[in-house]
Image (cartoon, rainbow, N blue to C red; front, side, top):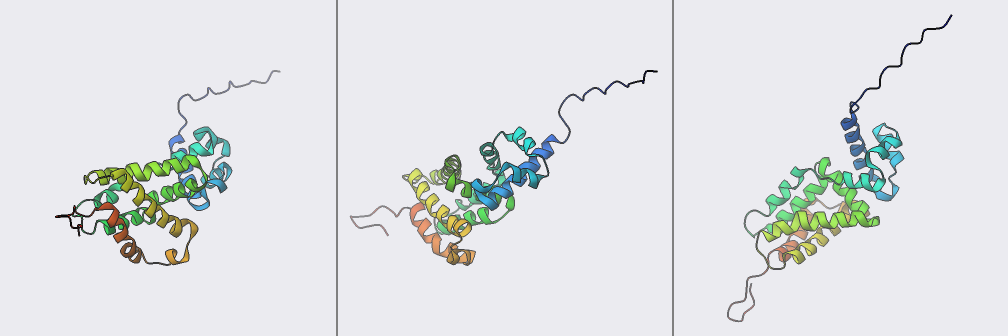
Length: 213
């Protein structure tokens, strides 16, 4: 007697259900892991474990750790709203408004803070991440905003302010300089704001041969 064998079910065609959700879970896990451990210490295996998936699936989605990092650095569009708003209004107090907005982006909502911190940690050891960070800060954050004020040497001013603000966040969020980590946010704004102000707002042109005030 020959046993009856049922035909194998036809394979399901089309996109697997839940793929988009799984990919987002991997991105969320990677964002948190890069922000916590930095680029070098983060591994595909650790990200996969955090997301509850196989490492092979992470590789299927992104191909490599570098590509995963690039995807993680996608910043929510609304994250820049507060920073852009800092450049609105009078020149007076501009430096403090910019410093306040910058710190709030990096230390506020985790949707923005985590990818930015991941970017900052990665930039220290990875040239690709370094290039992404420079482009993000100088082009997306500062050049457009400063250029809208029609000041001379906008790109140079953007680079100087970028260096100042990034240095602040490296000391406060990566290196952990005690005096910075222990400082109140308003204290930092009060101290750093005037320095940023001097770069963003050039002094008025001298009149009658006298230096501007």
